[in-house]
Image (cartoon, rainbow, N blue to C red; front, side, top):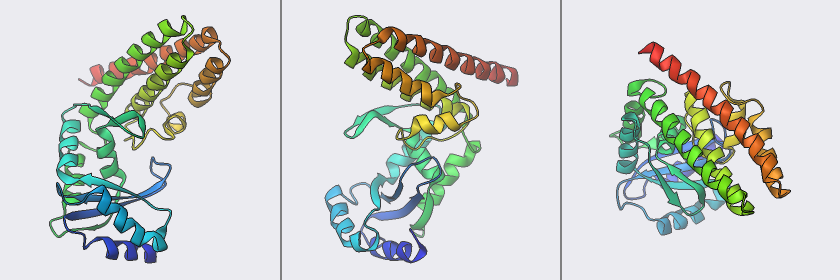
Length: 257
């Protein structure tokens, strides 16, 4: 989005009743797509109203994605993250679910295009930065929560795979690998905006299993070939490497304490 289109979009949007801020993403910084997030007060803007506004903007930037965020809900999510509380909720279109830390990531990576004079988005950014570039409580909680999730998913999937239920086993591995992506980002002190492209981004981080992306994709190929034995050989090695990475992290934390 160039400067001219940005100014036109802001000009069209900022008069919407209840809108508090407009935040943009350019397709970099931990995300695979550009988007504009509209932060509003509770009840200030509905999806139907957003669709109407987007239709007006199609001629300006038709390929842009728009998302709604309620300011108070985001503030609550950030508070939970700073306290080391992880939550995940299921939403249509999000097969893994939406982790509360993703709302913190949106604030962390987002570029403020416009906000009201009381600076609600700047306030959210300042609150998130209270504990440094990546909150340590969030890091520890993310690692503990999603390592447990991965273990449970793999245990359930393995028992079903041995009974011939490859479909269920594949879904369980998807849940586990998405959980590992969360852990890898936390180990590297990186906020994760979205699970889309998460395996690829995790593969590029310095603290990550060797050839993580290739090996995750190989597991799906083994499942597709109806070979759960080979799939779980690779899964077991990945799980072992993840445990080693987390163990090193735990030792570092204990040494620091």
